Length: 513
Ligand code: XMP
Image (tube, rainbow, N blue to C red; front, side):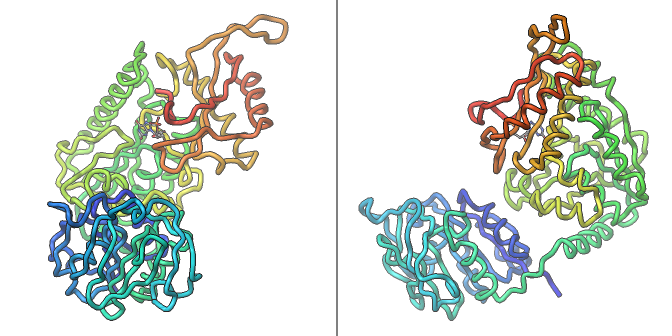
């Protein structure tokens, strides 16, 4: 039985990724494609339903994005959201006009009345709050449609042609501010498209494994393992597919957290793949000697990584495929659905595609981060690795302000380990999206025992964030900070002061450099 798939046509809206997330949350596989995609591609995709996203344009604007009207002849249910709804109205013969006065514009939370007899609103309360964000409105419905929802300013907040199974909502069901948003999307998927909702990680795993086997054939595969979640899950998946043909090169740049290198190695120890750990710590330290500028550090680490990786791959002889742990947000950022874009693994500083491989494998290309974690669990990777918080490719080097030395790395590793241990002991690992220690370049006077000390200061950073684009400092309990601080000054030689960072992003960033 073929997977049920929803095609999301992208008209440039700001919540497009969110629509895809919400559909996947309902165990329905979906992909986001640009609205300019050809009919052949749409047919090849074989959608069981199509969603038109919102977008910043007006449908009557010259050059406004549109879609091939043959899409209406596919016999497939369609849901238009915001701009998508207006486009549906216009292309099917209705009328969309700009709101003449601010009164007809709607922005923000809006109380709306639903026709609960319609499959799209079945089981919902008759009134509820939705998130609106539109200047234009539908002044005349296309033939065959009726209005299915209304708000004070908008007589057509939703419309539907039940026979053809075409629906449009003026509001955004994908954002959390729309109280019944998930229910509306569920109704589209299960009542209108009559889907089963049986897309699970097991089925992804099975189909990914068989696709990889077919693609790789008798070839050999090389994977650069950074120790991050994406490349580790990618390695485990490839191991299951073509274990004996896989070589993983784990470049340990010596800038990882305490025990991290060993944990990565242990996770792959019992498998049938070739695992090469390159302990390149000294080499990286030499390259970083005396370098104080953040950008210069990043550049040198990225370059050195590539150099080490190239040296190792040359030793291995001809290898046909290079595998990378690219995930869906990376793909979307670099142009949705565009197969030609091959993004180098962001964690490892960009591997050179010209190393001479016949092909690039990116088996996680269609997954979101939390789906990658689910797959990792499914494949038996340890929780410590799967639920690892984001860790920057340049590692501790950008958490040590100023020049990196072996001594500073030891101090930071120990301080960071104390912080992580205490967060775990307090059951607070979920209280911050990311938390870590950084080593400032400050020395200050203190008193330890009976004597004067003149030692370093550690900064603790914990942030809560949805997407890492903005972040707020996490309100950790004083008692926890107190415990972490006293343990660090007592247990980590060379530190006599601990700060807690109470800056948000912006204006600060999550990392220090
Ligand atoms: P900033 O410091 O920009 O960090 O607020 C946002 C998120 O990105 C991570 N980060 C990186 N990840 N390579 C990475 O793979 C990098 O060079 C890098 N720099 C920052 C950071 O840990 C946070 O999660």
